[in-house]
Length: 373
Length: 266
Image (cartoon, rainbow over all chains, first blue to last red; front, side, top):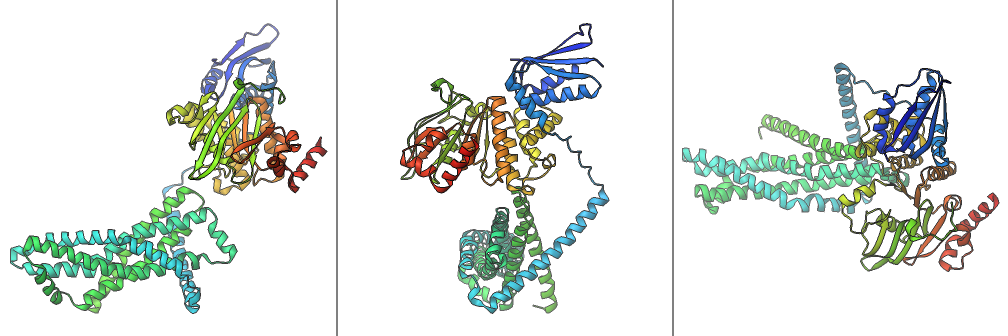
């Protein structure tokens, strides 16, 4: 039934009767409010609201009625309600009893300088937090090394399985494809100079020194770093981290160390593996595009790469592993309360890990240049 | 509230017939029958793992039974599609055991979201109605702009109730409404539930272990055991029951204490 408001004209004695009827519920509320605003209320005298014809009055409808009465009363008019059914009167009483706050004022957006300042301050606090986290983890590591029996091998092995063994297909496939791409791109240029055989140097050096550790690090950051953040973050939301503390297990010891140790074990192994698959990709491409047979390729490989190229690539891997695991865990501990925060921190974790990995790689390159490696 | 009158099928708000639920080999509900009448506060009790929450989830369309029929507000809900269920879902409110508030929204936004989705109210009215619901559940006014993670467990529960009440539903489902609340807040919830029922003709179905709440607020209580409703009656009748399942449940030390309390009050 449509809700209605009928205002009876003042019958001489300064009393205005307002008849409310129909269903005053949440679905009719917008319409009702428009009509109430359109009513030409008398500026003084007495107003009597008759609610005997109301078919429904829910809490939203009752609030609107209550608010209208309050506003009318505030204008110096006497207001009263009559004829409400007992159940409607009960709702009105319920509404009248609760104190409804005015809507909170909308927070003003801070100006650019304030935002910049806050941003910078957040950055400073964040990096201090990160360094202290690294420090704490290092102390936890030292403590565990002093009592190796306390090192948790089961979670370490579990992480080796999930971050390493299960990552074999994807890392292998991607570096194989990368090898193909490099050989393919190089082949054209090398053919022009009749230097086909140097495709071996190109592929092997690029993969071993740079691409294979970097590629592995990026895949692991996306695969495992994000998982670490999400896992620790969710544990924080469900207060599992607090539970660990009360049981007397340091979250660093149980959650961070096994991950760091596992990644430090796994990343160099994965890098060796992607070295092999990457060169294999180049070898296949060289065979088809440049007619360099597998035997020739392998022969040349011996001369093309020195042991130092292999080692310079490989020694980056544990450093990358540390960065990925620590950033992932640190971001996880930064989750606050909400599900949205888990998503946000996971994004930050992956972006920061990849950024730091590439930055570190650049630093390595410069350092190796100095050291003439 | 006329509890003693024999209810006819017509005024049943929820009617469950021949319900069978199985998880693998484990039979949870074995040909279960149950009905909830209009305007009553109906409580479902039973030991842990007896399938109370599963039954509730099946009624509110979160889970599908193996066979049987569930009619809610006159409509068969088993096998209903999401589109068909929408009008029905707007007529009931659910308060989950752990609140299930959206953690990225403030309390006021949690309540307002329901209104925004299902009504044509403007932003100002939505804010006001949300503030009314929040105040109704006994939360302080400054709880509105807070995020669920900033609230205590009890307050979260009230906020969840405020969201369940957003559309002034005809039917309210409460999963453990007083678990984790201090006694004062719990009795506040009892009072609120009672006054809402009187004002709005609300039907309430709850799952609870709170014996005080059962004595205070429930019109009828159904005891679930061995896959069926062992008995559904008023607390006074249940406390006299000879059924081993029922007496086991109500005649433990805590059951006796609550019984004594209830008699003292009378």
